[in-house]
Length: 274
Image: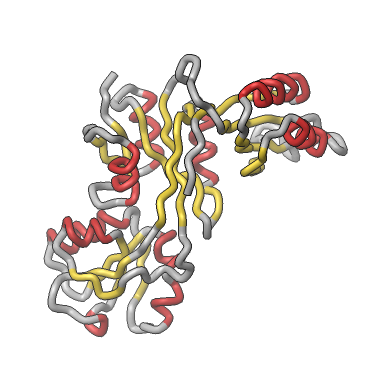
């Protein structure tokens, strides 16, 4: 299998930054235009691991990515938190008054909405990737068009920053997970786990499951429900738990395997901090 790491987006994207931060050695990157393509590259062996955004402190969980991980049986082996700073950029020599359109990923546009309310002459246009827009503006000398992207993207593609850190909420953090096809054998220093479970559809079943987490001294850091497509009205729960004592964790896991109608470990790994 290739030692390549897949990212969503191109050089200058936030996934690119996470890959540089997370891996101490400079591994070759496989740039993917969508999360579907990214996941397929792991499944078919084009790369050994992939970096995938999973939740944002403002927008919440990226639900389609939870579904992708589950559907393709990928395993989380690590995580990384990245503070997101959005910058408004365009070709050199222009002012904000010269920009008629700004293109970026829908999430970036949403997170910078307040900034552009002060500039109503600028049309907001959704695009697939932040850095890709910056590159397109640079490659095609597109005057009157702006991008919202990272500082690294501005530097890579020779654009001027017309507005720095324009996100409405300054404490904007995205959590990324590192995924691969197979779980590591006997992973060391684990302090966090991701589970998916389905419970009997009866009163108190979820409360009982959460009591197991609490009684075993685990800290529930995330809970997200998604409908079970094959069974209308039934939900699968995706949870993240952290722990200090692996013995407590294994006890809770054993109990959950008995209680749940289905139980799946999405990953066991070392917890990261923001």
